[in-house]
Image (cartoon, rainbow, N blue to C red; front, side, top):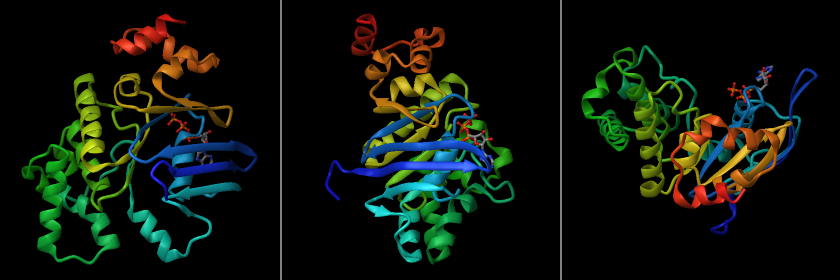
Length: 265
Ligand SMILES: Nc1ncnc2c1ncn2[C@@H]1O[C@H](COP(=O)(O)OP(=O)(O)OP(=O)(O)O)[C@@H](O)[C@H]1O
């Protein structure tokens, strides 16, 4: 795979439930090392697309290529190898409440690898440190953690197998603005240090303005526009316009070049 080939390439995807068509003829590319923010009105199918890429819900048509592999044309063994290179932080953290933080982080390790317990314990602590939690959190249960800590622990679990791509579904929802900004910073830092590709479904305008390299907007069952925040601000798509140039967006402290692009409109 060449350096600038997409790490995820989705073509002509069609997904429907009964006669309810959710995605139709949808195309999307995600490039290695980028943070892609994925937005769209509620119920437009952001989670359905995410789940389709992860192979968690069936599609009726289309092609999904991840890390150069067409997911419909690989063996079960190859599929496992691709799955191991994708980490996921589901909406609401989705930690197992009956397991400690350490055990949660070790779930993917147990599922895919056979490692001695001592090594798994060391790895779990390393992952916790990576996301800014101390080893003290390892033996706590999710109910003993704050919302921000739960998100970080869930991120540590998503990173358990050193993936190339992490999918984050609404990672900052439920966090206060400071917690959300810190989480955004962490995501950007991990992308820079680990060379991760980040696919982030979000409604959080601050995240989109501060950490997303590119943004894709879902509407009318497909990707309406994809581009930088500056391109979003120049878009004349009605939903994009009201989302990125509406009242809420105007409260955000924009970087200089983005503000200039905005003023040019
Ligand atoms: N398994 C399913 N069976 C039937 N319908 C489904 C299923 N999964 C999703 N849908 C429908 O698909 C549509 C898109 O749902 P989805 O959860 O992807 O929206 P979303 O864009 O992620 O919304 P939100 O921003 O509110 O999380 C909704 O109408 C939902 O009811």
